[in-house]
Image (tube, each protein chain N blue to C red):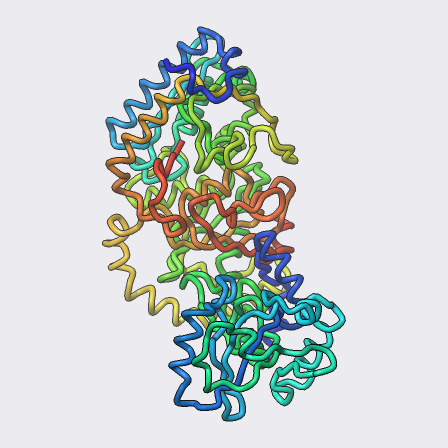
Length: 192
Length: 402
């Protein structure tokens, strides 16, 4: 791990060894997305030291642009709660999300609605980031919209960016060219 | 525009939700009652055969500033041609600079322009106020300007017109070029608002009524949520009718928009929510029986909808088979589709619609935390990769009551 490139050193000091282990696992999911032609973002949801949900991008597979890794994992947590006789609203309040890329505005909204307290992510999402990059859905005061959540960022950031760059070099075959910006920037669409 | 009698058939107005910048501009335009102006030096072309030659020289030596490229270089005025020389502001003559910055003077100039319309020829030639410099003073190093008369001051629009209407009325100051924007967005209508045709209102109302009904059905199931309808405006086909499913499923994220987006994905051979189905699309329902407890305007809205119905259905019939064949192949997410929602979408739903690349969203009532106008304006955020048009206030009362 190249520690010099980490953006928020003060945050990284708060990321524990255990957290790093979870993030590393989330990267396996991201790799799985990549191998399946999806934008390489992966995540885990951990409750009481166990994985209760995991996901990777499924946008192309489902033809549904909202099927980001986080949304997939959230649905798994719902299922896990049903199987284990837990009340999902309570479980979400004690669940930490580990995701390779900063959650987008939509996912940040979903995480608020579920009252997720903490998100640990790798790299920033300059195109869609909802935890400070484009908007701060994580921290803003939004009426009737769940609770704000804390973010710890930067661990494995370079690795996450590298995966996205490699993915976008081969371009998303399903995405039409962006009318607004053209293709000048890369990675151009971080569906994370 | 149709008759006044028709006008009264809708108690609601579809109000465009603009970006903050557009809103400010609109406000300024309203207050100003005319274009913002900037002072220029111009001269009459004495020998008309020289026009293209002079234009070329001036374009090369005194190109119009980047922000004023909307101005035509030459205007035709009473069988006379005038050509723009250069902005008066940039000139180093003290009296002119003063004149331009003197609010009293600018006001006078604008007023004389505005009142006298074309008669004034928009010539600020009051010798007592401002003295225009001679050609030699403006073009110190250019000798070949024989074909020009003495320079005079003229007030020209400092911004590009946003509509054809503006272009026409601003021509009395100086002719401008007007570029209409993207085809799927009726910028003129969107910016100026309030000029939506009755036919368009009837179309919108018909789809919104479906969303209202879906929302009401969800209430029967114990939800208090919204209803969403997604339509392909190309053929008028309803692609998804959904209501909020949070209570029923225990999943707090199954807002109506999320369900509707997945229903469209299912039509395209994808989809993620296995057990979650949509409301009946029921094509024949368009303009169908009135809702219990619905007020008169909805009825009249349906009546007006009848006038567009034959047109829509014939189109629909023709393209129904084609569209079914091409739907799986050609469509990408919700690209180009219209979305009708009873309530302003939240952050999650608004961004979901943006990710899905919808082209227009119509909603009934605003709500705290809404992300298409109230807490955020995601649809017109410059640093996001897709923008879409949003109208609020569609059947607001019915949407509020459901």
